[in-house]
Amino acid sequence: MLLPLFEWLEATALGAAIRDSLWLFPVIEAVHLLGLALLGGAALVVDLRLLGAGLTARPLAYVGRQLEPVLVAALTLLVATGIPLFLSEAVKCYWSPAFRLKMAALALALVFAFGVRRRVVRAEPEPPRWQARAVGACSICLWLTVAAAGRWIGFS
Amino acid sequence: MSLLGFCEWLAGTAWSIALHESLYAYPLVETTHVLSLLLFVGSVSVVDFRLLGFLFRDVPVSELTSRVLPFTVAGFALAVASGVLLFYAVPVRTYQSLFFRIKVVMLLAAGLNALLFHRHAQRSALAWDRLPTPPRRVRAAGAVSLFAWVMVIAMGRMIAYNWFDCDRQPQPDFVNWAAGCVVE
Image: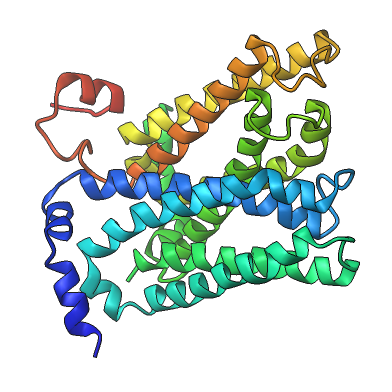
C-alpha cells in the first residue's frame, strides 16, 4: 500500500541527486553519524543521572535543562540528514526489516523522550528512585535500538 | 617483518578469515563499534562543551571530568576492543586505507591533546575549575578534542568506501604514498 509512495519518494530530485553522486551519500552519512554521537552524549548524561550515576550532585531537572537543547539539535541534525539518505534508497528501505524496526523504535523513542522522560526529569520534587531508574534504562535501550537497527539497514 | 607483512600474515589466520566471512559476527562487531561511539564520543563531547564554556557553566570542570569521563573511558575501551576485531577481520585493506590512516593520526592527536590537557590541569591545580568560561588554553583543548573526534568518526565511516584503495589504480602519487600502496 505504501510502496507507490516510497517509489515516488525515491524518484524525487533530491533522492536521484544523492544516488547519482559518488560522494554525497557518504558525506551525509558521516554527518548523520556525528549527529548520533551528539545524541548519545545529550541523552546518556541525563539517562545516567536518572540511573543514579554521573552528575549525581546536581538536581535532575538542571542536568536535563542543560542538555535538552543539545538533544533537540542532535535530533534535528539526524532528521535533516536521515531524510535525504532515505530518499536516495526509499524502495530498499521499504523492504528492509531493519528500517521498519528503526522507524518503530524511533517513534517510540521520540514519544518516550518528550512525553514521559521530559516530564519525569522536570518533576518537582524529584521522582521516586525506581521511577527515575526505569525511565533512564528505557531511554538508553530505545536509543540504542534505533542506532543498532539503523546500522543494520546497511547490511541488507 | 614489515607492518604490511604482519597484516598479510594476520589476514591468513583462521580466526581472521572466519570473522571476515561470518554472516552475523562481523555485522554484530561493527554495530557494537557504532554503539560504543554513542557512549564514548557522546560523553566526551559533553565534557568538551564544558571546556568551551557552552554547557554546565556553573559546574566545576573537575566535577564533570570525574563524574562523566569514567563512562567515556568505558565506551572507549569498547570502541577499541570492537575496532581491533574489525581490523583483525580485514587487516591488509584496512592497513592500506587512506581513511584508516587519517583516522589513526586523528586518534593520536586526540590522545596527545587529552594528555596535555590533563597535565596542564594538574599543574595549574585547576585554578580555572569554577570559571564559567575557562581560559583560552583550556577552551582550545576542548575545541581540538571535538575536532579530532569528529574527524575520527567521519574517517572511520569512510573506510567503507574504496575510492583510494590500492587495487584501484591509477591513483595520484600522493595517495599511493600516503596509503602505502605497493605499485609496480
